[in-house]
Image 1 (cartoon, rainbow, N blue to C red):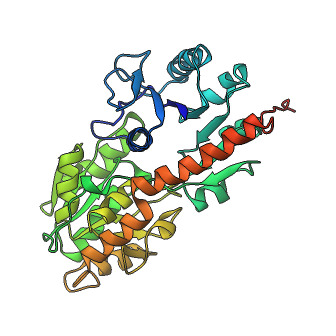
Image 2: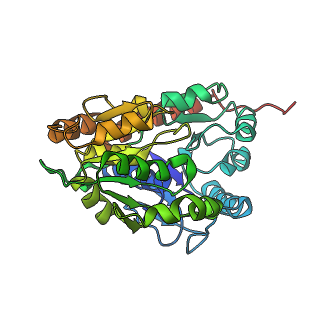
Length: 353
């Protein structure tokens, strides 16, 4: 199958540190190429792939901007129009509108974000597109779409070593934004009497929060702040942590760091928000709690983490969240979509009201 994979223009594939979408795109491309598909990745010029890399922007363009995205996507689809592709898989929303100019090539689009009413209205005028949701919870919260299938993210387990024992610390990994809950994570660890390692960076919209709520917390004696970290450091951090804690304050559409922890044998203790109860197997890969007090109780020395079976956690995560499983499900979807296109179905559009 000849696949045009359109990533974002904002981060490299795979990302150097932050960047969940781009990490998933990398794993998907590598798996598809390994299975004999011809994959052309449209991404930034500093990206890596076993397929064919094509780039409009040589370097990532951060922060995100609609005009940058539109420029990247329209150039990519111009390349698709002059080539020979069976299918387009886009991870950039602007592709839906521009792809109207290529009605003969079926389009698959993965929704990587939480519910956004503007985008939900936008998606409604593309009934011809095959949407992918990344969790059942995300799909349930999204506006109804004619064709939407849930495919969980997957990662290569080989990148995540596992250890029978752990260190004495818990960890938080993610954007240092209020909705991710780093302030709560630090407070919970203090209440439980355990050290916490915090990894992540501050994005522009979160600077005021970081200044008022995090700066003083990161200086507390039980906190070790690591800044933004790459894959090697992250894998070691998760391998040795007693637990990853995720006190999220929003409806997390997936939570890639959760499956990274599970693949490392590291239990996840998370709030019952968004997809997290769906991707955490309570008692097997972690514990889902409802309050900060319950989270603190879960991570205290001698609590439920004592005797946690890290090998069992890893095995369960490999079954549910390996890149091989993710590629399997995408292959099946691609075949169905391309078969529909060849039979003359699916490709249609409607006018906005």
